[in-house]
Image 1 (cartoon, rainbow, N blue to C red):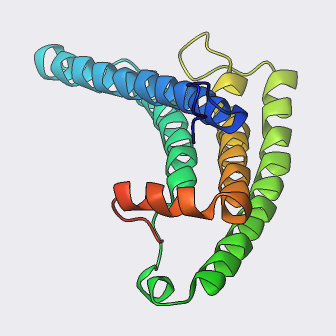
Image 2: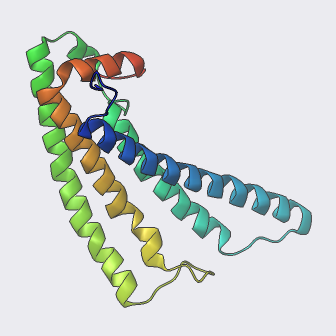
Length: 181
């Protein structure tokens, strides 16, 4: 929480910085999807033509949107979870299970980042572009390692709160519908 003199702690600044980036990526991706799909739908209805690159760019915008949304919801525990049993457990058991969850996610994330980065490297080496555009395919496929990187930062942030800010985590959970705490 904030200190009494109004200064934010480093964890609050870190959280705010990550949230700012996540919100901007999510917004840009969502706006791209809405505009692209809307314009292409109208264009197809009126002229019976469609840009060949439209579905490809929309797909990659959706991937950016998805991975950054995962990071945002991972932070607050509002992702898909089987939580009813956990709510009935003791606080100690809840904390242990949360820590185990974070460890598993960090392991999975490490595997995904390293394997997806190889794909990005290949896209760069082969100078590939998104079909029908000059957009480098590496930029599109970079969504996976970058999105997972943000998710891992959020998971580490959550793990920190499990160990050092459990009361804050529980308080946040009250304001986040669908949270597992």
